[in-house]
Image 1 (cartoon, rainbow, N blue to C red):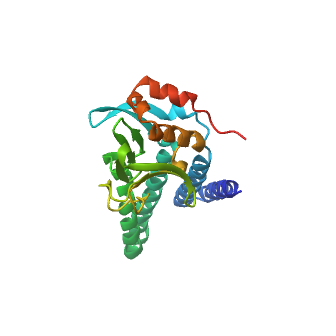
Image 2 (cartoon, rainbow, N blue to C red):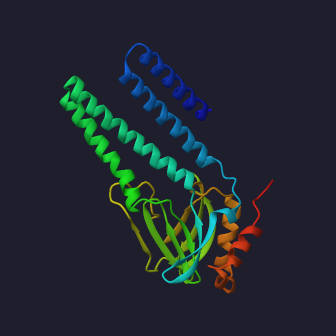
Image 3 (tube, rainbow, N blue to C red):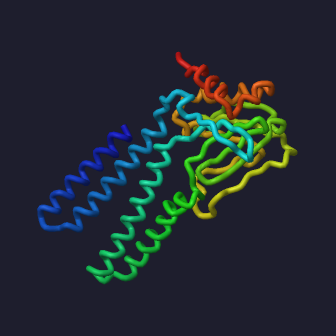
Length: 252
């Protein structure tokens, strides 16, 4: 229902923009169209967060980390693209508004505020281009687990992980719980745009919404390597991909 309402608002805004354009207001059409785009992006992002249909193996790639073979479970590409597109559109709207008010209306105070908002918002896609904000994922090696969120990095060795637990923190999460006295390596990659948060204690908290896969399959895959140290040598090889292919989605 929320998605339908947002799309309805987007269509109504676009139709209103067409009316304004027919009446000779090209600026009105631009602002109405930009607002429609924002509403459509918000709706699309909401759908992307809720829909998790890809097989687990499609989100896995073989890579390397700290010179070791690694298996990475990649976070959603479409969610990240939609987020960057949304922030870019909002920033662009503010900048366009600031220029228009300065040149056409002489409203320096309002245009100055819009310019500030636009420039601050523009720092988000710039941070994404610089790699400070990333798509992210969970990287598994024979040594341990490293997590890259949108705006943070965190890692624990397998020996530092006490167990794996499925939980609900306002949304489904998978917790790789670390011992309280471990030297937890964690930190944010950006000061301004901390769009996701580290847990308060040594832990890898996997937000299931950020992955386009069945959360039960994701849990089974992580729990398998946490519980079986003899299988970790296959991480970073084709065998880890095959294991993901065998990890079937949960069905009722």
